[in-house]
Length: 389
Image (tube, rainbow, N blue to C red; front, side):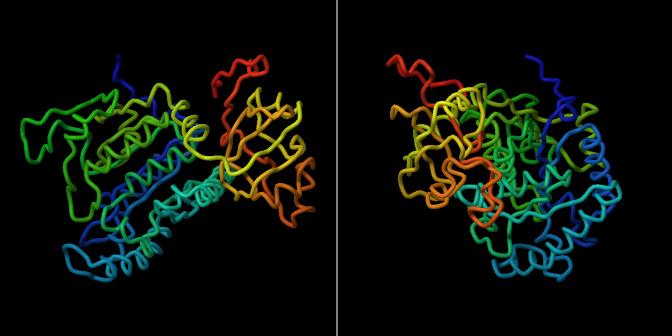
């Protein structure tokens, strides 16, 4: 199997790039402006090729501690949060100014891991990010460190980046750090450590190779990067670990600089199907007409016009079962509306939603990205089969 995938970055449809604190911030001098400008040139080059780019940027605490002249070494929790409050403003301004030189608008998103795990907050975050990308803006995402607690202690922007990548259906996650990839052992400890260029699957042996953080400004080490790899690759997103210590790190990857490539799972849809169709208990049921049933089988979203009735008391983001007119379950998905609102728009056209609910809601009752068929058309013959999503 070939491991030369350097050109994959420029060929991606959507890529998430995570940048470590030590790359952006110098302990004494503060922001590394020249490096940031070079990075934004790389981003502009990708967007000019039609690649959608999202950035997960560390650095708020590191910048804040520099501005506040906090001492070297570990910070107390309240010090980290204060540093984040000051540093986040400077970080957002730096990204906005650098990207604007290429006529690119930056949009700031502050998340915690909880925002990507709780279904309702997940859907809201994804909708905001998706809209930014539709408007050709580059979302610049960071942990909301001013309110986070566990995240600050653990240093999880690697895993947050992986969760963002799965949230938006990215093709590739790039983790830029102060190390150029995965080694069989920490190279600063073991001079005989071997570099791993291609990782087809993350095994317990691969996990055992992870080391600790490499600098005081980097809150996550190789362990969090391997955790990120498990999240991303299981959802069908490839991952690269590469050094960001050079100018133009993205272009360097394209040019073939050494990096570690983690292959995506061969069956990512199966995992998502299990999550929606098997592990979550439906909070309600939607009965649909024959036209909607045909639309679902052809891969389309479920629109309010095709829904005949709503049962149950569910919230937006909860799992609901979709039934045919004869009462058989044909699909499951994540509700785009609360049950009370869903009942008001049953059978209505999407353009009528704003007048009925008083606000401009989503066009779909369940978006196709949040829906999986649980029974094929053969179900009507009495033979139940899991459908290909």
